[in-house]
Figure: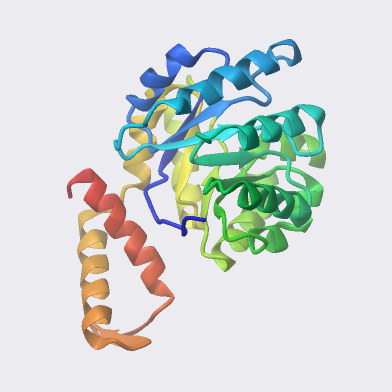
Length: 285
């Protein structure tokens, strides 16, 4: 199993498994993550073809272009999800990462982890918290598998389960709880896409609020949203300089805490500093 790797996750976009010809365009959109969709965006009658088409993409070596590739499978609690997992276990060229939707308990993740381990696949996992049960168990889910790299907040389904409006204020508790769970396990947390394409200013406002809560990035529903999202979640030059200074100071000190500019800085801060430095490196900053 490969170890958790920190990387930029400022934006992501879905591309349908049913249309593999759209995959290269998604990769070239400027996003940090491309997620091939097998779940909600695929009709039941098309699930088998979408699965075959998506997995076929990984039979060829993937370019080292800095874009994270994920396949969103169907829920492990559904027949389509079981079929997705069976197909992944049969292939010798699995996707580098899987997104698990509607996770309710840690057991779902543990089972998939064990199956992948038994098969010898190094595939990473990304978990969506979008149900009441998943929200209740979010902390335990975040800690249940070393394969998990990130947690995603599924605001649309969460709002439906809660019976509340899909807006910032009604979902602030749920968002915060997912951010807390992810942070407790050292995971990136990614926010739900902003659905109104005609309100780019509103998207930027919400993205900034998400960043303030600790989110590393936010989803998009169209390539035209990606540039703005990347800008919001790209650290400022002064933050980059500070992060590099802290990393260098810790390395030279070889201790659990240091004093920088008169302030005590402890080692847990390093994770965020490393993430900032990694984003800056990718951007050539």
